[in-house]
Length: 366
Image (tube, rainbow, N blue to C red; front, side, top):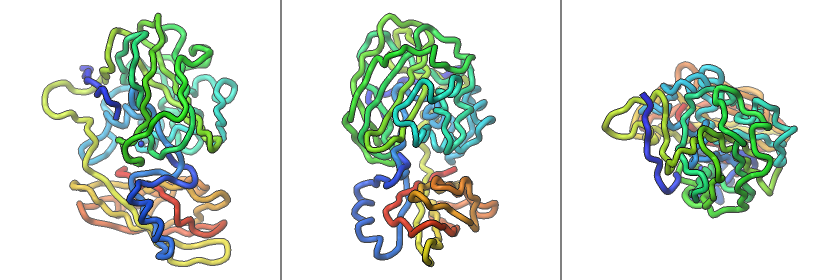
């Protein structure tokens, strides 16, 4: 049975280089370089983000698929199909549907049928291009003013363009450029940002007037273009114009009373990097991953961006996903389970330059 949930009126967090930090970490980072230490917690280094109201496919699937331990266990059929095709990694990186070479380009750059994944190359978001009538959907009223919310996983200047489909869509078919209106119904540059970056509470907000004359099932397609780089983010938000006020329906979610199962879990982790050795053109580092939450975790992932020209050559006590400037390390088979307060370590060797003491990757419960 579908569960229809009232979206809050106030909408609920980027990797690149250099990465933004929370204010407290900015203070710490001013002194940590001398110690050779870098802290990694809830934020990515480049500009990451995604719509939260109306919610994008990646955000809502992440939100409504999390278990109490932070594992991705989708029950919604569309989110489960995306999981089966692309795995858990894009769920944990719901804010990273990007092209570093996008430069604001849309039609002619992103192929038809790949709009919702942005034809992303860092992570596999292709599961979110799949057609389905079961994607979580936000109920809206055509022509009404609405507060839009876009997560600011890291804050950067830029503009947001919101497009809508021309006519009611067949959601079982992948989205194409011909389905969308040629011009955005809303454009905003550098909207106000609030809340701590690197968290679900960090966000950009602005008021937008929804397109008039719309009814039935549609997709709002959002393009965020940074003005300080070519990095561009793409996202699909499934909506239905039926007189709603932001309620979210999630097919396959259980109904009934009790607490909202989609509240962010208390599971969380941090990582501390220590440079153990350096040489001309390379270095070795050790990363300590700690469970700083109140509940046990079964697996983790540390994600970061290296300076241009660097790469991770080898990893021990972890599994490397991607060895170029965008690196992710997940736990090995024996060190993923961590009780509250427990920690483990992994190490890596990188080549192509010196360690970036200002880098700020994220540690995520995986």
